[in-house]
Length: 91
Image (cartoon, rainbow, N blue to C red; front, side, top):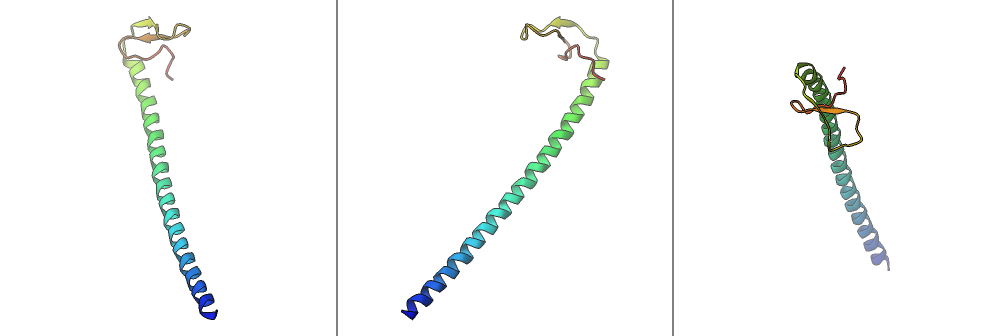
């Protein structure tokens, strides 16, 4: 009876150590993935800011040819046939 109890105790310790290792590895992977996600989100925000600045520059530089946007019949804005921007002032 004592041998069985000792074996069960050893098995329980091995299982617990294995589970802890697996959980730690999964947590590490999770952290690594989150870091990549945050890095990509920062890059996306930077690129969106750059695009806003580029839109401003395009809006100021283009000799616009405004036409109604037939894809959006209820829109009050027009679209430039050259730069494809709407007639919203880009400040």
